[in-house]
Length: 162
Image 1 (cartoon, one colour):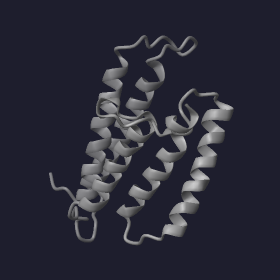
Image 2: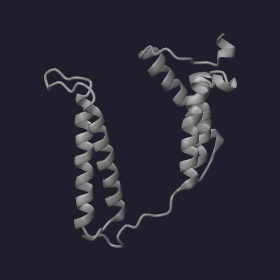
Image 3: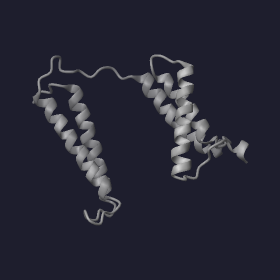
């Protein structure tokens, strides 16, 4: 069998594997029925749906002819690095790292730090745009998670709030 689109084949394979893993993992929870859904019902259906979409994309990559085979390009190491570091930084800034003495900095500082680091992944970096985005994300996150959902986590650094 000849792969006619490498991009579609490997993205379909990823969807199929991720969906299958979620569906298998969801069977560890009580699935229930359609009328009385358990905690595993939605993840199971979502995993199955994702696996079906992946299988369809893989089938399409084997049957639909593409112009150049849509080869997979090189790994984008710079964006990959900055996005992973940004996510790790968010967790550290939000909750702190007591084992090495880093205090919790709260939601606002975590969003600003993460936005600044992750924005380095792109080709251009404009500090004014990044700061505006950080302000918008901070206000939106504060409104959604703290005010509307009443989630209890630090908003400001612990050395300010006590």
